[in-house]
Amino acid sequence: MISRKDAFALVSGIVEIPIAGESIRQFAMEQLSQLPGYDWCGVYRLEGDSLVLDEYVGAETDHTVILVGRGVCGTAIAERANQVVPDVREIENYLACSTTTRSEIVVLIERKGELLGQIDIDSHTVNQFDESDEAMLTEVASILANRWE
Image 1 (cartoon, rainbow, N blue to C red):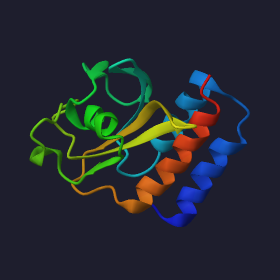
Image 2: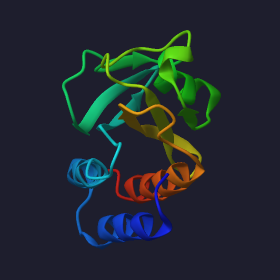
Image 3: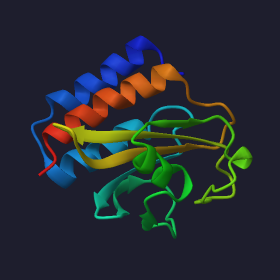
């Protein structure tokens, strides 16, 4: 539930910085973590049939490798579709990174039809994310894809 103004400012800030690879991914996660309700912000890289934790901001997680098809992150890859989960307690195959997480959004990072990974955002608030967050994160994912390295 991000405002258009805040989304534009965040995306513009990421576009303008002349860095790539891990540096742009870390910078983007740092920027996202400043938004209200964006309590854990990370990128997972797709490597074969696994998602491998890349750059992130937030508490450490035991889920540094997630198999495709497992949890919200693995489901996004398996279904090749973004995931917006209003309440993670209602998801049967949810992989809890934190007992305080209540909602989650996962947006795929693709370049020319190739899945590179995903942005994963957790919130301590139920129903934190909507189509405005998905649209903004899709823009961020596009920037990251273009500067992936």
